[in-house]
Length: 64
Image (cartoon, rainbow, N blue to C red; front, side, top):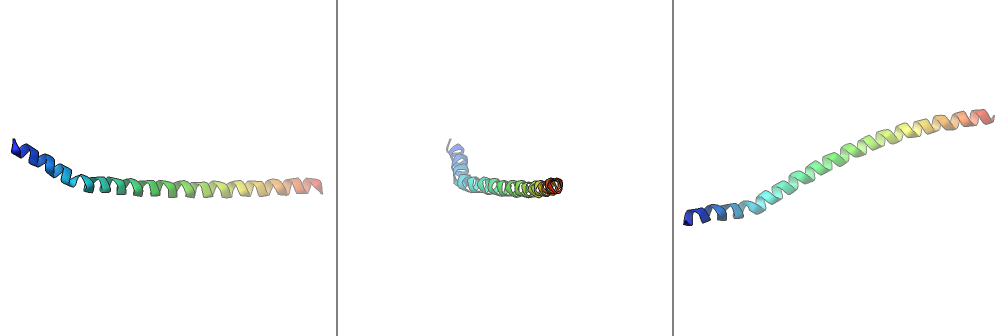
């Protein structure tokens, strides 16, 4: 009976370490996802700006 309690006590003792490890892994995963998202967003914004520049040139050439 006492030995079963020792295993539970050992699990409870390591619970904070496991919690911080899981939290750290989640934080690293989140940062990587945010960086990938921002890189994709920057790429799409550049493409949109290039298309807007072309559109402005076409509209200005029609005015002249």
